Length: 282
Image 1 (cartoon, rainbow, N blue to C red):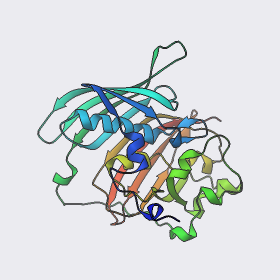
Image 2: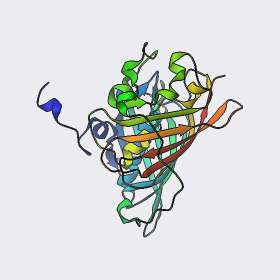
Image 3: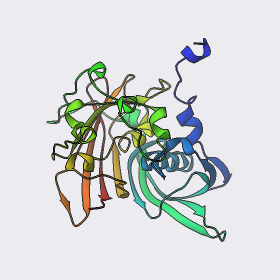
């Protein structure tokens, strides 16, 4: 292994940073080439797309850290050129709010809106230290006792490029679906990081909440589970080290389910929470 390969990527200088970077064409207008490296099966990952929009809003708004982002996924995004348009909605002393949409082009050259988001940004470093919570970190076996995509007996049909860019170790107790014996509990837990060793920041947390296999697998379902709406709350800047993610589903009805995610850092702090509504094929 070369000396260069041993160097850990840093925040601001990693594949994730390069692939989510947007280029300002004009005020409120940004260009990006969506990378095929963040696809699973045939879809660009929704958390990766949210990080792209999050970076564009960070450039537009006077505050730099996402506190809350709500996204509606309107049409499926594809690798390739895209345009992000942002608008400043309101500026306050501690929070600023903006909206953004990502567009691509169809075969006739017409713009198609893929995602629309509304977000509020602030400064995570200015938040008070007072924490009062009943939440507890998920209990997950050590990473060496968990399993990643490389341990799968068979590859996922279609693209699994995103798994090459993640350090993902799944709790064996949530892997019944991979062995043909789903638990029916609608739970997924894992250790999470970026494969190049880059530590987490608020933008990679937007990826983390949507990076695990869907809980629908443990409910005995298979196939693509497209996100309809996803809301993420960033609670504090994560400490260096791997993250722990817990996702649960309590109700599947009418072909839709919710996924509630918690992301914990190496200092046992709840750094992000999310809820998404997803569609399943019954």
